Image (cartoon, rainbow, N blue to C red):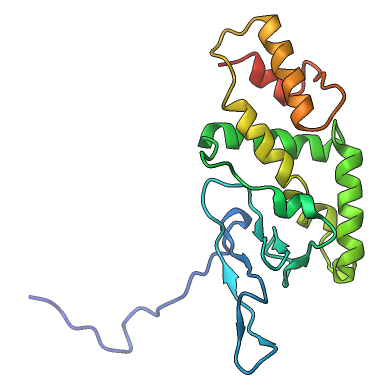
Length: 204
């Protein structure tokens, strides 16, 4: 037999809200894609990035993008055509290669390695085209990181998928780095022993 509880003795319901981790928070959608009636009245919308890709939403049609939920509105990327041209190939990179690529380019970005000058220029262009970024409490260097490194992350992930099987000879490693440097438009790519890319080349 079940015993009925009175309202006075019933436990109080409490809500236990937990903030979503930044990696799974939605991003602001393109304001032109979400344009509604009456004309020229856009309703803010949020969208979840596709799983298995770098965390950056890019509308190639209207040239808007976002990469961090702290960006309340999408960014104007018309001055950065390399962002709209960057897209996965017909055969998207494997999850393992993409995970390595994101980790590697994030480390390069944070430690000012290899592509620092290019990414710094890209950040300057983004902030110039989106003055509201400078008034945000969060640093644009942080909130725009995934977007700034997006093209090179995809390039690196595709290259990692073509790595020869382990163990790799010195000749294979040198050939890979030479090919990757060309794809990244670098004259030379010589990672140090502590570089995550070199660790990837020397491990399974």
